[in-house]
Image (cartoon, rainbow, N blue to C red; front, side):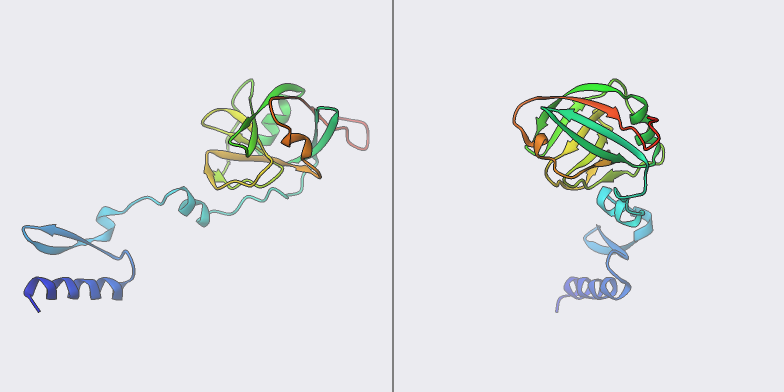
Length: 185
């Protein structure tokens, strides 16, 4: 075995013995030199960072209910007990035009950006999830599941059938607070 090949094999063995990513290699002056992994650390991507964080449950207990009235139907949703969801409910009542985006979600511009205090870095939406997309400042309601997206903040979830959201073309929606048992908004 040539000297260079022996050195590579030795360093590869050392790297695998100390764990994946424990040692980086740097080619300098025709030879291989070990470089401390901490000197060249890389921040985790959004999916890696989110996996270490506590997952956001869209099913958390909440008493904040809203109605979405569209195309002769009324959908009920439960909002999370978060600063973003509370900020959203403070905007109500709202009348918005929902437009289809990527055959996955309906989106509409909000009058202003919502609070992102304590919000996760991103979210993996499912059918019926109501979210706020921070880069664009818009509301996004999903009628198909989608991948984890950085900047997506969960607000709540529609209860039951979401068929009216699947209609093609723009939809006018009125979003209002639901009345609680005592008749108060």
